[in-house]
Each structure stands twice: as structure tokens, then as C-alpha cells.
Length: 196
Image (cartoon, rainbow, N blue to C red; front, side, top):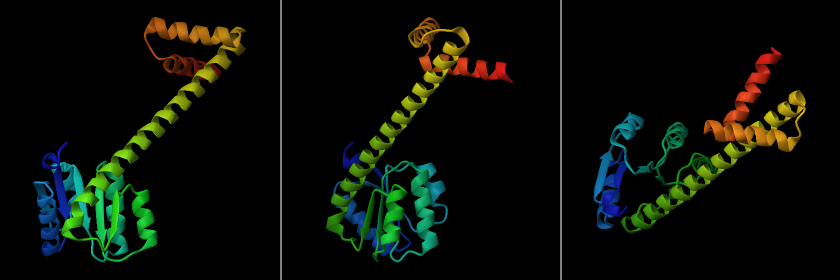
């Protein structure tokens, strides 16, 4: 996706600062830029306008304001570049934990906008890939766990060996065109129901 295709939302209560950001974005080739000058209702606006990237300039943010943006960052799955004027280590750590892609202290200069945007997008993509890989790994572990439990049930109740139990689950899954974990879950649920 080229810069001109990206839809960018700039949230800043100060119109002058927002204009500096917008000018820097346009000069860098980011042409689809929308500015909002109030933070109230920002979550709803993000839902309706569906920006690809969000830039927030908070100047000297209060803790409540930061918390609101961290919650927004957790809720939406988009790159967020956050500009603040003062360094605050705990706020920066919270921002990173919340998924803020770029937390920039005293960096509001027109010529820095493009590299910060590129960094925010690249970090967001890397973070998203890691989240997907973690989800996949957890899902595989959960599937393996339920298959192991189902094998134990078949071994215990039908007197099968582990390989026979595995083969029975696999054959049933193939015949029913389902995943082994789905068949295993059915076996576990059935066994639990019989034990009630």
C-alpha cells in the first residue's frame, strides 16, 4: 500500500500542531489525512472512519487522557503514533504494553513525520505477526492437549494402546472431514457427560 492510499487520522486539540503534522504528512506523500480537534467521541470516530493509521499529539497529557488512549490502542488493531512533549518512563512502558506503535517524546517536527510513520507501521506489522504466531502456538497446544486427553479416555475405557487410540481419532476425523481436535473434543465431552 503506497502512502497516498493510507487513510490517516490526526487527533490533536491544538489546531496549529495538527496542521504541522498534516503538512508533514502531505509533503511525505500521505494525502488522505483527517484532523479531529477533540478527543471526546474519538473511539466512535475511529470505528466509523476506519483509518489505517492514527496519530495522536497529547502535548502534556494527564494520566486519565493517557489511560483512555491506551484503552483505545488495545481495542483497535491499527498503528498508533503518539506524540508527547515530556518524557515519562512509566507512560512509555504502558504505551508499549497497550500496543502503541510509536511513542515519540518532543519529536513534533515536520521532517520527522515520515520516518515516524514508517516506523509505526513497521512495528505494528511486526507486533501483529507476533500476536498471530502466539495465537497459533496457543491454539496448537490446546489442540494437542485435548487430543492427548481423548487418547487417554480411549485407552482407559476401550483398552486401546496409545497408537490405536491415536489412529481411531485420526480415522474418525478423516471420515467426518473434521480436525482431530474436534473429534477429540467430542470424545472428552461425551466422557464427561457419562461421568455426571
